[in-house]
Length: 134
Image 1: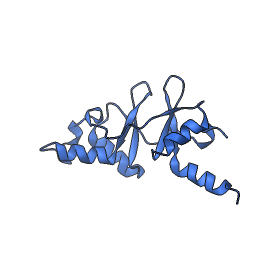
Image 2 (image 1 turned 90 degrees about the vertical axis):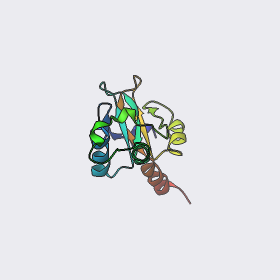
Image 3 (image 1 turned 30 degrees about the vertical axis):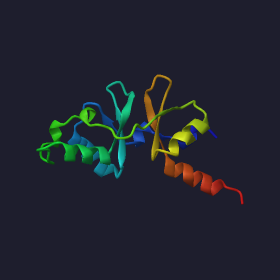
Image 4 (image 1 turned 45 degrees about the vertical axis):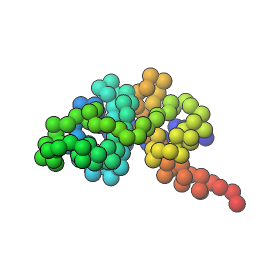
């Protein structure tokens, strides 16, 4: 078993780019039903992850910020309350599992940090639940 067998490829995953706005983030989270979403830079490199909580804390901490002016706030300016670590596609399965224990999903990158997709903790749990021998 390797990391790639759990991968949801980039073309099947919602993500933001560093030039995205808070409004775009909220719209993508709503459309995808995600609670957090990867952010990529203009070269497709993994930049970080933005969560619903990050958006809520930004809304609370910014006087005058409303749904009507969220399009003025770049996602890169929003403080991330959790650092979501990525794993390289050729890493050991144990490295990915260690990250998945603390994250809902694990971003997967190549050796140059280009974003390849995500591994969802839900899929890992389902796999091991199906394959546990009594």
